[in-house]
Length: 186
Ligand SMILES: C[S@@+](CC[C@H](N)C(=O)[O-])C[C@H]1O[C@@H](n2cnc3c(N)ncnc32)[C@H](O)[C@@H]1O
Image (cartoon, rainbow, N blue to C red; front, top):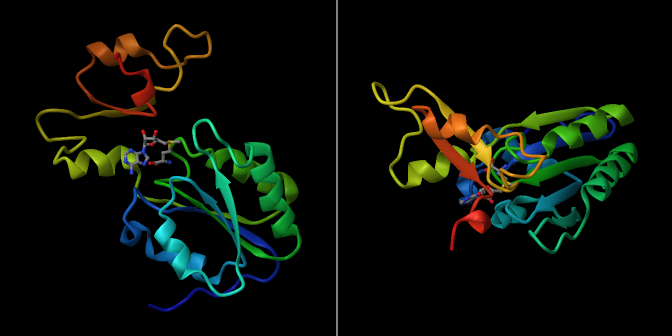
């Protein structure tokens, strides 16, 4: 596998690490990880992948455990921007895909506001990979033509909930609920 040219100046890549197995990251994601000066890693990102980083790399653990954040989102945005402004190459390594409940949009906006180039490297999302592991295709010809990926984190009665649960419950499509285990009935 050939590498990627190091862009001149600081850069940021929001890299989806995939759903768990280290070899489910994309080729491009791995290439960027191998040349990064700084890796800001999430709890759910495949940690084995850190073995691919070059010597001297700065590893920043962003944590994001449900009740034990190491860094707040604002702090994560700030550290990404800070390192990028210092001319370093930053990989923000996430679990699954950065734009599926990954807060990648906020990080991309922070980079844009700082004038830093930011590449999004999609990842294999758990929303598709986990059903696949169980042998469940999220769409299937003749059975379902749509799939909804929703967060189960916000209680449906909460004013901040934007999920139309009634429509999902009566619709024919596949529903994949992420962050839903804590809300399961006991
Ligand atoms: C904050 S979301 C991040 C989703 C991630 N960006 C993605 O595309 O897979 C975290 C939720 O994704 C789901 N999840 C992520 N990785 C998983 C895995 N390896 N196995 C099962 N569920 C997973 C769980 O529902 C978890 O609560």
